[in-house]
Length: 118
Image (tube, rainbow, N blue to C red):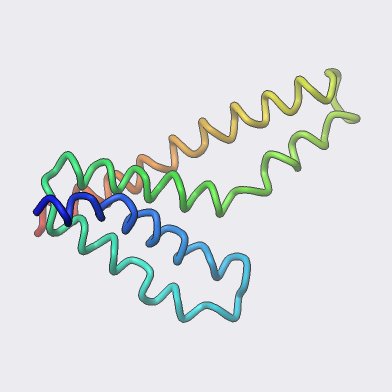
């Protein structure tokens, strides 16, 4: 049981990366068909605390990879704003982290439903 617990978080991160790979390389879309399998295994076989952490990590990693382009885009809007480029970069990072936390909640809710159903 302890060996599986040690692998729970890496499996959740692997699942998020595998699900995000087709966003960068569209021809790798078949990976997305199997990407959730490691996460579902973790959610079905772990205590609720580990399942919660794994689903939060999955959401944070996946949405971080899916929305990577937001920070440079917002930071480069500085010439059109009334503030400096550094201020825009700081707000871009703060907004990005807030967005990741918000989107991660949906993964946590998904994880809770899967864990409860299992």
